[in-house]
Image (tube, rainbow, N blue to C red; front, side):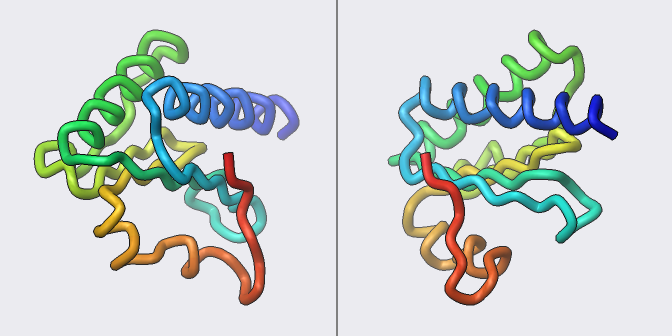
Length: 119
């Protein structure tokens, strides 16, 4: 369990670093351990345009493949409004700001009055 948790945390840190390198905005991480069997972490970020959202998703999946040796599942990259990247241990959502505001995923996963870790 500790080994798997370590890999999950290492993957999370690399995802956050990649998003930061690519100028993602309003990056929020949500700890899902004990709340969901789907993943250990969720990361939600915004890009300023469909082009930036798609580019951040492309770079992130390339970096994960190079550094961790596996391919992530990706949905929505062609449209660039909301890209979902499933790395197994970490689920990443990259939105255009208007789409993120509409869906408000943070509210769905955070307890009432709770807060997420912002980077």
